[in-house]
Image 1 (tube, rainbow, N blue to C red):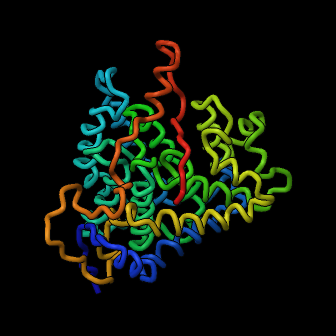
Image 2: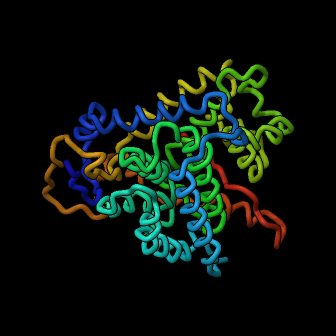
Image 3: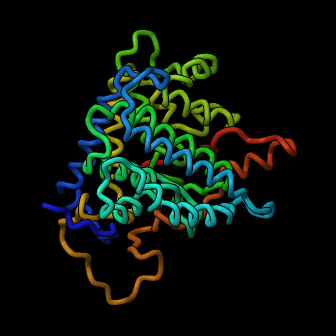
Length: 357
């Protein structure tokens, strides 16, 4: 029986719908997939050899092309602003235009699924209008991986490579985009993540370290250990990125990560990360009201509420302060650039502390 594919769209506008989503099959599919990928990288290093199928290699070539587009689309002169560089919109348009042909090269993909897949893929790189990025866009990339798995472009034997090769390649490209276009942290509090932009590299990164005989969570405070382990472990690579642009201690600018470093074992860090992701990303209306539902990840909850007055905004409802897309937050890359010597290139992302409600 063929699948009736559809272009994913937003469905959730209220807290009642969010509550229904949290007990839905789609929510379970996402959390289960995270747990499967998480288990696949326990004890695995980024530099370890792993099975790389034709599907994995095709995805890596696709991502290489996306990075090439970024290099072909330099930032425009924007010295007067610390906010996102308008050239990002040109990059985004190029990705959107090229995405269908890139997906045509994926082995075994039903081409009828291309519009559904490319929607998640295009929106995994940031928001075109606001020139920002947050955990909701990172979630779009995860949904893209789920769809590829469901459509058998990749299989269960590819799960380790999906994290250590494909997902990590995505994170590396996002660092390029964040530093090139000064992407703003999505939402007025930054993002529901562990740095300005990301959550999942810390989650999968802590899985990599589960059972490590010598390295403990508190090791993130030792610069030499961080530098040495950053080549093999996502968690330490992310800490190195933070340290590359922040001059104060982690306790000052990244209190959540500092608090986590006091946990005794990586097993507890990792299990806590999964719970935190469910609560702070999948459980937050400002994030999930932007979630895109299609045929592979369908919405099966109650219809959205009706409102007497039209909503002025981004096609969704703000409850409370509208933390999802309210007050723009300048990129920390931009702030750091002002403080550095003229001509010195910033290496790595700007990271701001993230308060969790």
